[in-house]
Length: 332
Ligand SMILES: [Zn+2]
Image 1 (cartoon, rainbow, N blue to C red):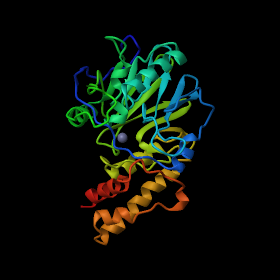
Image 2 (tube, rainbow, N blue to C red):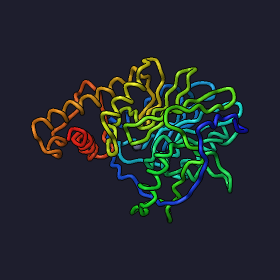
Image 3 (tube, helix red, strand yellow):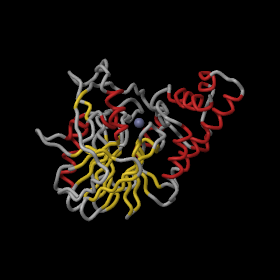
């Protein structure tokens, strides 16, 4: 146990900085996205143009990013992904590194205001830039929180994010560093003891080759990273859809659990049955198209979700293509 009471069994320490910046090429959502992103479980304790913070339990808050403008257009993407704050007597864990250092610095200030201290630990659920691009913003001078991710996420981040050039129109004059873990989350499950609250970090796979869910047991709250989406069609760009399906079934196994999806508003596991329905609809259509010998692009452009699943906004028009490509990879 270290001074924070964190169980470091199985953790290895190392820190390397490197890398660059790419912006996510996300297009505007529609009015449905605006409506969907506005739905709250409770009155937000903080609201900004790019995100709100909702209190889930004593010492537990969710960050819900709101990347769409009131007219449904592309809005402020300072944070872009969802995340959260989990506070115990001895330590404060933040979930996700967010899209920009400004987003992370904002959340560090919010943690200080809500809990009385800055984050001592930050966990990145996977390597996508809207979840790790802002990590440097948690640094205060030379110090900063422990950075937790799996070894695989660290290597994927270095490989995929580290070699990228700053994108056209990037808000940064030069690329922010891609940070690697100072505490490696082992395969399987690790427990982080924050003092009077324990948090489970569960290594999973499906959205990428390495994902983590961050789970609190009392009350039952699951930060699902991008294994879970609500009202926004999921990004399959790096997905293994069979593994994704397995992970989602496990994450949604308890109907009354409260979930914080990687994108979209908060929901109970029961309410996310429509997300399971989206994944199933994509699978059924992809299997049919593949069996019929339909070219990938044709299969994707002819695909629509059943209206019974409600409105699912596309962040980007290529997301259907990415979904079918992921299934075609699996189906051979
Ligand atoms: Zn992602």
